[in-house]
Image 1 (cartoon, rainbow, N blue to C red):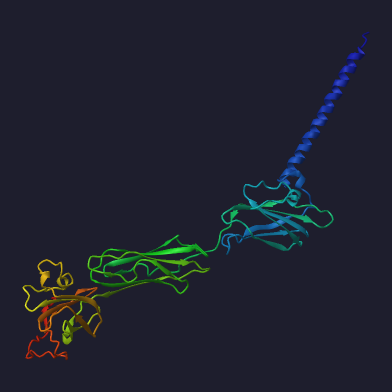
Image 2 (cartoon, one colour; image 1 turned 60 degrees about the vertical axis):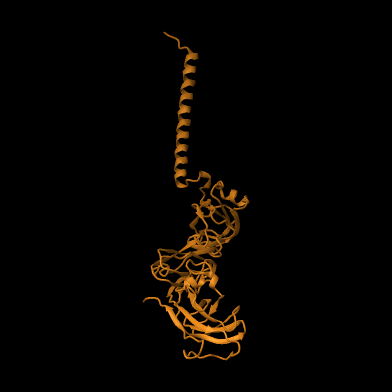
Length: 413
């Protein structure tokens, strides 16, 4: 007969019980882990957030920030299934997201963040207008609701996607008049800064031109609108150009109102024609050294008159020679007895007092009128200064010392 060692049996028993206990404990931990994973699927935020007594938010959104009158407003919308108090913060995107409703409620975010608080009713949509945001800053909105049903529990925090507030912008409704072709020159209008614009933006409009004029004349340039006041800043709005010349740009300034605007370009051209002179002559003598002459032009402009003694060696034949009589090549300035220039009106007699003459001496006066189209034909007025008879002299060739008016040169065409 064999005897058992009781110490060995006791040791094996204890080891077996420990192994069984470990197996039971391990199974329990595995079961808890499975429950935890399931709870995490039900509420991804955290196990702590899952609570059927907490308010639940729905219909959350942020709107009205794309275009606002002042560029500082956004509207946060949400609905709570429980009556209570909402806590809202609109923060720059780099601000840490609140981890819980209670954390959001007790935190005061500093500018440029905006904090808000108010009451909500169960099942009713709530809209909160947030003002004071910074234009161009990227934000996120964070919302929680604290129930007022005795539990005082907070909903899970809802956080929006990033959004940026901007101001309302306006533009030009029509620009069909900006590009025009007139007398060989094309127009175009550009704006700085470029459209669209916010209300109150100071804008410069520049009217530019390309190519060259095919005829001589006067352009009219005007940029106008019934919706906004445009002020011309630079350039000539009524330039005179010759053949082969172009136009310099003209700029206008305006301040953008709170509405779209219509702007129209007025671009016109009036062909220039040279003046025709007629019915000129000698009126009489104001004194022993002054003769009064006259002529009539059908166009306004600047007249130039040069007076020589009778029968000079060489006389001017073109308007440019008269204007530049003292320096023009081929004209002997030493024979000039008087030179007068001033303005002439259209279709009215222009009176000219010629001084520095000698009483009883015969003279020849040459006159031309210059306008934007060029020089008129050159007219010749022959007269003898006679102070003793200062009455008006008619243009009869039979009167002694009085010669009729003659056209020396006439433009062809």
